[in-house]
Image 1: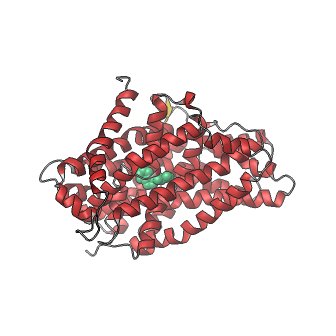
Image 2: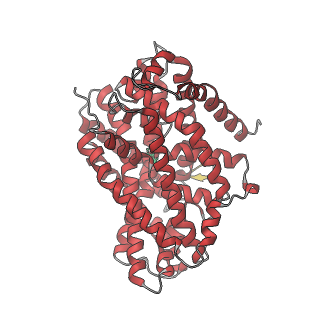
Image 3: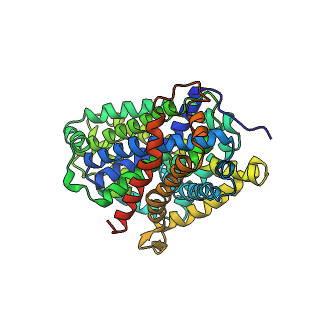
Length: 450
Ligand code: TRP
């Protein structure tokens, strides 16, 4: 069967950045930074992106582009009978779990998008809080929106790599950037916004604990889509002359910029109306809906338009990311089990939808659906971001750094010697020593051993 590929360099960067830029940047990053000390968390996060994220991304790119195959086959290809394919399986499992809980939040965004158009989000703080509680605890609505989101993803993914994934990313990513910039400018111009900007940019290191390290690491991996073979699957659609290190740098930069821009939308607006930014996962659903409206009370239409733009931004960002999570499983079932793309996509859609139902109920109608004292949704988030992704990323680095012959790694890194590969030695050092050791230390610290 003919494999799909992305059609151009722009397509490659936009599709991969589309995967990276998502609710991780606009929903997860602001509340994580809000809970973990703002700028201090932000600096750790940037450190993790530079030192662990970029080498990790390049490693997944190398495996995927070399193998030109789905996640499991790609890890298997150079394994000489060693069970490295389980790293691919782990990635496929992780991505389906992420899709399941992510779709719940994406579904909330869809609901809020339509509610803001219909003008239902107008009211004081108590009203908006009540709106969220009554919507999220409805036994049906959040499930329906979550599954609608997965189905939208499904019907884009089955169209294939170019007509589905690449086309959606090329259309949505530019709109997304414009929305981010417009909202950021509007938010920073509000009276009293400076306190919010300071919160994001002036570090308070007294908040930094071992837990904050792990959270920053998890956030960096989650935000770059790293550790689930997602980047490996996308890289299998790259062309042979794609500059892997440069692409990784560009994508990491776009991703980090989006996180900063989101922070500069949310914290200044929150500061302007005197809201504390540490209210956790519901931050953008409870604290934000009426922020624009309050902040622009002198021009209600502007507040109305900005809140629609904000939720549109969330929906688009989430969509290009759910596409990538879905594609990992779809590519695997298509190639490994020889099913049609349609059929394979249904396997992923059904598995993720089932999880989505339980996750949605766990934060609404059935709060008893808990694991380790956390609602299922928060448990899946914590399990994947703080454990499965760093574990997948670490195994990937060990595989590329120690197991795959370094001549082959070098050939991929330099596009068969056509690039100078100036940074190859640094890269290899990072994947061999720095990444695995840092991740193990952070794990040990979390377990209380260090
Ligand atoms: N990076 C995306 C975000 O920031 C989420 C995401 C998409 C993801 N694909 C992934 C996370 C694969 C981990 C693995 O929202």
